[in-house]
Amino acid sequence: MDARTYVSRLLEDLAHVTSGEEHDAFDPTWLRGYVAGMSCAAQYALEMDRKEDE
Image (tube, rainbow, N blue to C red; front, side, top):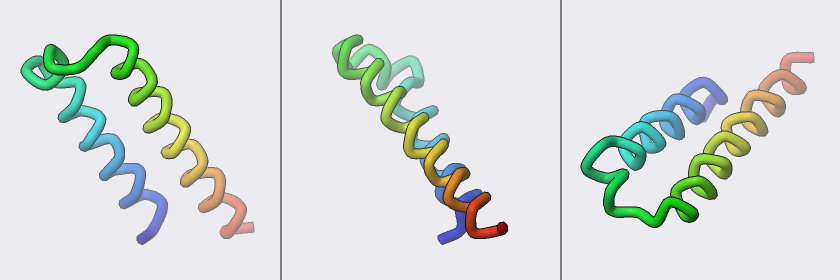
């Protein structure tokens, strides 16, 4: 799977979990950690893709 597809899927999942109905189902502390983890995963995927292009 290429980095763009991977990041796109991460962002779709992130949007789903942070949507109105889902947002209320999660503990705020867990949700902050989840958002941080998804952001970090997306960043790593893009960095790896950049290094492969070099």
